[in-house]
Length: 427
Image (cartoon, helix red, strand yellow):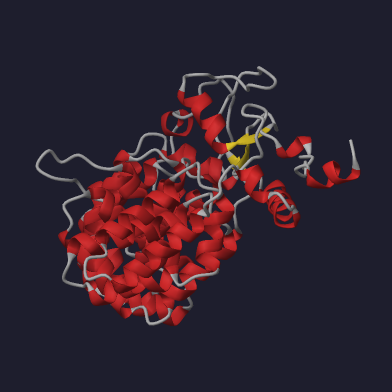
């Protein structure tokens, strides 16, 4: 080949083999790893799993779990390589930048009197697995995307449909695995600045929306803000009676059938846990019904994180006199629910349970609560196991006090042990 022909020939870019998805053999846009340690492009492996396959495509090993863990290190390497490559467009297979299209949508959201269509298209952009994750993160980092979404919540406060669409996009940004932590922090930081209009919009959607998905989206945004907020912002949110009452409604039954939504419960409980750290909010939470509401969740939920957070809420409200009084009032339900979940949420959950039971049975000396605890099947065994599990000194002392609630006899001591071993009691 002559020199002129070589210069005019298209430049071939050698793609590192570990940048390619083992299924599609294309450069990975969203690299995720299976439990086998093999990394795939998210869209490809998700199609494989959705087709009913239960093995790793590369190794054919059975998959005990199909959780997909983002491979952020590889993602950054691919991004750096794509940035420095002279043939990015040929690798991505796109001649039109998806981010440019999304950027046009952001400008339309700013200008339009009816931004709902543009908001739905933007939601499609963030949910589309075929859109490069780099494009999604670049849109957040290099444009007024979040400012546009926030402005909609402020200027369209009477348009429920528009607010739901805007909140849908924001919820996708703060929850999606495709969005980098830095982009999420930027989003939450912008939302937290002058949060009052956004809080008002979230409350409106929680109150008026007929769709549980939209109400859950509002909860997701609130949870993200609360988790990153300082004490001033958290206290500001906790001051809203409407917000607390709507979160309690979120964890309760839905509609006439009285069914519940597990995602809504998880988000609602997480938000209430964060709000309960604000001391002045606890009495108001009790007044609005947090004790029977959370007791109901403890009765029905088995998810360890939900149970653990529920027990934390109970522990927080048990620190105030109103909370202890409410637990005594709802003793038959609250005490039994807390005692039954004592060993279902790890060490932290167990210690929270003991703190609640001690506050009601020992500090308040509520006779009915004592009788209920004494009648809980396996209650004594759970307390003994907790004392032997390396719990804190304070929890151990509380457990020792609670053990005295039980009548010590051979039947009660050995009820939880299916053996002929003689057990020496610690009292």
